[in-house]
Length: 413
Image (cartoon, rainbow, N blue to C red):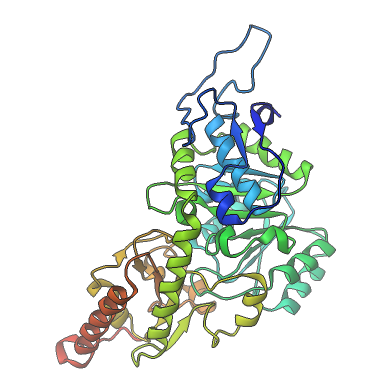
């Protein structure tokens, strides 16, 4: 309410495209100078009209005009009622977990982000008293079976599609329908697609979580997470926890995200174009045993993905069958930065089992088919030809090492 009171609604008109809405804020601050770039309110507190009279903002933990701009814009492009900016994607996920009471259950997939798995494996059951169930989310019958077996005790279903890092595709609408029929909320981690390519709330989700670290800010200089939600009661509960626990995004990182969001569509479309070409290259290379990319017709979930998303996105993973071959490929690239995370303008490469998913116990990774030789690529905005040429050189180097006596690997899976 305080945030809304400080905003000046724009003139109503025909619905514009998401590309235009990214550039032109849905609402503007009541700014006497009408600045083109959104102002940064880098302040902790706000002077009040009087000792018993309060203005729209009082303390930046509870609300900040720069954060309001970002939250309102995210709510607009997600078709949500409200959005909330947090200090990280995991801070956002942790807040979603607050919606589940001790004794209630959370249902998640088998292939999920390593940080989410760490929370579900340690904090949720040991610190919050929650029951955690995992299921193959690509199989609707299995999801239905678990929901029915729990007899309404599942409060929250967490979905990723495509999943991280194996890029499996889940039927978001189908899962939402099943979950709602059994009284559960659905939160979709939409970080890989972002609202440019996929909008979970339009598919029936109650909450869409997007890591602002990835495509929203887009330049590897922000850590943040966004929750976009529908329903007044649910939104009020999320805001209560954001304010009470103080895990919100800082004003400066909100400002950086607002700057980044203007070019998100341009960046993501170019990144996806690069990813498609890289996936085609990988699919035809003899060292590659399997390619995971939702934009390939050979992907087992390509039909479902085409119904719920407008692009294959820019994240690819592949297997070589050898940890040593994969390691050489990763380390011998020059244009791909070896790093966790994804969604940057710079192309990134990693071996998830040793980096982003290292916290997942080895026995669980093996059980779920997450092999140690898996390589994940996040395509950036560089020249497609340069990226593929760089990969070709790295593959040639790995191939030579694999056949030479000194380079022969014992690391096959």
